[in-house]
Length: 257
Image (cartoon, rainbow, N blue to C red):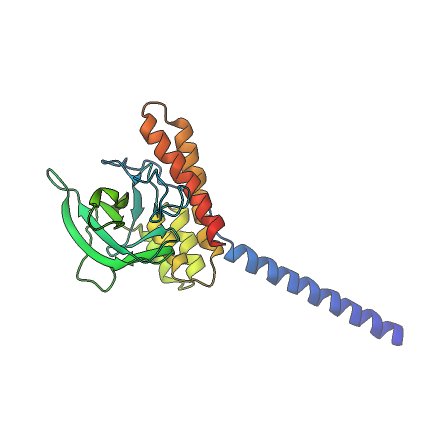
């Protein structure tokens, strides 16, 4: 009889362990960080993008961890948000004024949409249009710029970074999927899988406790920019910008970990 009960207990224990393993597998697979897939046919930047920094001084920190846009520079990153979040990296330096500017492409030169001064802080910084009386338009393209004001008396010494963004209509299926979850990692996955860079990274930056998602997105973008640089054969300047962006993104990951 005791042998019989021992067999039953062993069977139940094994079954419980199997169930726990299965539940753990489901948890890991459903919360895994998705791979960022850029748009199939992204628009190309209309103006030079990336950073103007090629020097080393107290304002830039060092050449690799300089002011850097956390966004694609080889093509226009996309968003489905009318009030997106913009992100960049500031090197380790004393607090200075940063001028954030946003321009809309229209007829002729870009038209200013927003411009504001904020204080810099080392590391990743963000600026969101949420809760502001500004909404972007679907189908429009914009260029955003961050200038670290190194020397108020010599604007030519300002450290400047630029990137471009395109606002597109949200796909119906994606809208349905987003409505079913408020978990930041799942939402970031959904955006990343469909090529919406700005939305994917905004979700990860909203949860500072879990930097792994942000680092993975930046690592993937670094690799994509490096691949794009290897295919660039017509414009040496563009190739150099892409290589520089790829290198800086990886250095930022190393610095922030």
